[in-house]
Amino acid sequence: MVLWLIGCWLTLAVGAYSSNATIASPEAAAYDNYSGIGPSIRAAMLASIRTSWEQGTAAGGILEFDDPEYSVFGSSPFGGDGGNFPKSTLQLAFSAAVRQTPDGRLSQDIGDALDGAALDGASAGSVVLLGSFTDPSRSNYWLDAANAELNYILNVAPRTSTGAISHRADSRQYWADGVYMGFPYIAYYGAATHNSTLLQVAYDQCRLYRDALLIDGPTGKLWAHIYDDNGTWVDEGIWGSGNAWAALGMLRVAVTIQKTKFASDMIPQVHNLTSWIKEILDGEFAALLPSNLIPDYITGGPAFGDASSSAALASVAYRVAALYPQQFGRNYTHVAARVRNAVLGGVTNLGTLSPVVNPLVWNETGLLSTESQAFGLMMLSAWRDWTRI
Image (tube, rainbow, N blue to C red; front, side, top):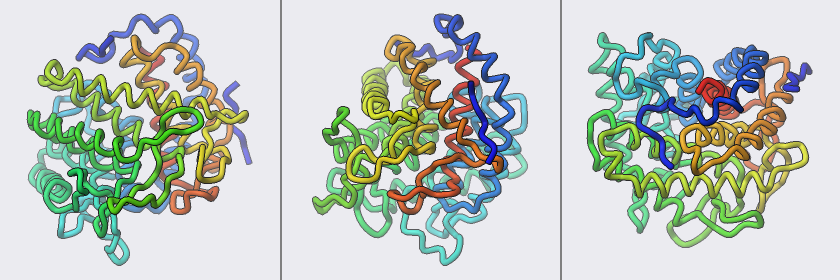
């Protein structure tokens, strides 16, 4: 195995962060020295077999890595002219739309088409809607697929007793994963169509999920994994990947809101979201193992080092340090650098992150995880963008 060793508010115009320029310069050189690892991680991700949530997460990773101008962190996320045709991203989006089930769930018409997830398909929603802006020859096709997905999660998916959209189609459950899967898409659609109601819905869903899943852990308040609306825990463990999904999702909702004309009216919502992200980073980083990896579980499961959640949380740390420098100081990027080095130091000669949690069995190590590969791309993209501010 070949180891790759790696020796207060956002202004609406993302990129004006000169206060970090001095510390970023050495990091820019470090990124340039090791940026060649990205294509290897990317290739291994694209070679993997993907389920519905993996398809959307892979598309999100490709968007940030290959077509960053069209991501919510870029200059043209909601239909502006990014200057290039986002071919890599739309290739994944097209597959998601082709495999859309009759009820509107993207990427889920695969195998027996009985995927029980309600929110997973929406993870590809933003890139499908992006197609309606950037691929005029198929504009109606993209838009129809995006509308069907939005209709499903807003009007068809089950709701819990609090009004939260269930992560599952066959029950009423809160999964930390759902915060990334569904709510950034609702916000993205709201931003693209100038619909403040949808932006508020996206925020409210993040709030309702946090209310249901937040528990006291040994390193602070963090999210348990799965809670059933019948009042029982399916998984009360503080799962690293679950907290990473939640932080990734809330970050995208916050940034999306801030890039709309409604930003000044939603300052309290964005403040709450960034505070909740900080809560997760503080708790997870306080639990960092001697290997500088996040444990698979802080409580309720095994504590082996997991490069998957580690890469995801490092990506969040780089993003928030750039976007919210008054709220997130240099310590977050210092920790992110340690985590990043540990993650990239474990990449194999096949380009796979290792060790990673099995995405289908959360208390086991796995050999290949599409989401971990996507998180690796997100981490590299966030590091790259942070070094260039």
